[in-house]
Length: 217
Image (tube, rainbow, N blue to C red):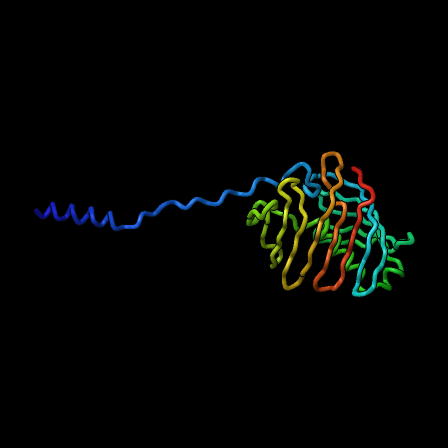
């Protein structure tokens, strides 16, 4: 009799206990981080020519520039000219380094010009791209990547159809900026942005670049 009662109690206990089911992890985003058409992971050297505009408050400065972009070593050698073709500066920018090669009196007359040029080049072309360790979700026709960088947060939007990054923002106590990539130029299997807009939230300036020429070195 005692054994019967224990069996009944055991069955009732099992029936009343909640069933724990394994929670399936959300499917990872497809691998859009190493596509052959992604210019920033192509491990190649590009020669680029841009026309541009630097806006500082209400002041607009037309610019043009030549860049040798090494996407493997994440370095860029840049010559920046005025809209009239007068050389302002020449510099080499890395992910965390900068070497000033030339600096004209005209460039020195623009407040914080070297800092603005270095930061915008670095963030547009050399750093802060999606990583496999970033949190990834889907939003319509885009993948959204979010991850920690330099005591801040980087958010990137990648077009699902083209594997083309269209937007990224970074927010921290030290930096606050946005980069927008628009248009598309095909170069030997790569898709380059035709237009880039960099907006610095703290420095109150922006840089607009329009791609005029691109080729592999």
